[in-house]
Image 1: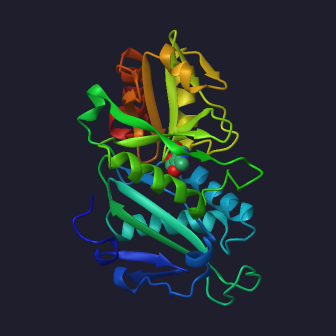
Image 2 (image 1 turned 120 degrees about the vertical axis):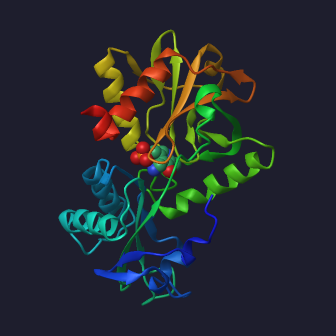
Amino acid sequence: MATISYDKMEGSIWYNGEMLPWEDAQAHVLTHGLHYASSVFEGERVYEGEIFKLAEHTDRLINSATLLDFKIPYTAEEINAACRETVLQNNIVDGYVRPVAWRGSEMMGVSAQENRINLAIAVWQWPSYFDPEMRSVGIRLKTSKWRRPDPRTAPVHSKAAGLYMICTLSKHAVEAEGYDDALMLDWRGQVAESTGANIFFVIGGKLHTPIPDCFLDGITRRTVIDLANARGYEIVERVIMPEDMADATECLLTGTAAEITPVGEIDDYRFKPGAITAQLIEDFDNLVRRKAAA
Ligand code: PMP
């Protein structure tokens, strides 16, 4: 996606309270977060200079850290201000914000009681995650062999770096076969989400979506539920088995990066972006872009 490596871009990165030149925002190789995945992060979008649902993202970041048993040494207000300052400093109008918090180098072992908690915030220009042309036909997904873990196995409601290991494996495996993304089932074999977005199906004119009991209840997912309610579309949160996809006419992914992305195909199932998908995309665009909403 980027033509140059992310560590070589230009700009400023907020790092433990300081605004550093991009290339100086470094972490040592003996960093607990790198070795033991003691790292949590956020992904936020900037639309027309404003971070969409910043407060919700910051609260989730703080909660993600709590679920990994560490405390970010800044208040929500301080983190919000730092995110806004980084957007301004880098003149980002439409882009992406990546706050990341991780355990440092003071102890190098499973126990990490003394490690400093670091926080960095980077921002960059970012267009659509999936090819915008795919909005008319939908992207192609294939079911992964990896499954979202049981909540007794991992802190599933944390946006924790370690939980993305199976996402990268899943996405690489299907990309090798020419697909855009992978569908992930959960540990019970129920439809869960994609590798970086939640999923909805239109079945009988209603929006069906899995219960987020072992994966992120995405901020975009909740936004889309609000938009659907405002339109009078019925939302059904329920267990969705893979074979239930045979009843679906439309399918869409929701996420900060994915926004609302129509899906045209999952394995042998076919969907066609229709009226409900189009309406939700229009409502979402109006919500995030103040000019359009004004
Ligand atoms: N699931 C996963 C695995 C994700 O990475 C994301 C993106 N953060 C989501 C769902 C959607 O969450 P949100 O709408 O809050 O971006």
